[in-house]
Length: 240
Image (cartoon, rainbow, N blue to C red):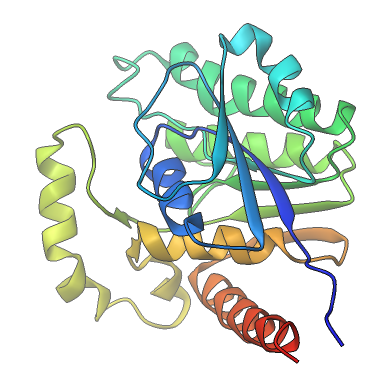
């Protein structure tokens, strides 16, 4: 007996960034995933992609998110204090205001599951502006009352970035050695390949249970393993 295909439709905001591009790449050839990306500009898509790209100014993203007809919102929006020119308000406008606007728009459109990429160490009481804004955003997201909310806490992301960041490149080069010293409660600060983060996002998009979940690296690895088992079982059932 052939089981009905469980195809999950994802609305991806932040598609042009490091994480968003990796999510798109890792969804290629996935029969169970369809992506509708919402972005402010066009971008080249990897060969074999079967997806839609909705280009709009952020002020019109609510309409684009509603038009995606998705079941899950994936929010990979984010900037840095460096990109913001050190302006705290510019940084907050993206990492708090734009993130909140996207998730609110998703809820208003009937999307009841959101996956949001935050950061390890996010804390509304942190002295560091970056981590404090991330923590404040997480608290605000929790108050929206989504059926399911997945917040991801990756450490240093290892991947090919479009812009040159000398210190970040140095950190990525040193990360394999440094990670070995991060054990116990500090294990969560280990670096993570952006491809692994993308796999975790796609895995969590398939989860059906409701609730609020915060995922460190270990939790993301478990989600990837469970999803792999489920996908293999589903693929096998379609052949019987």
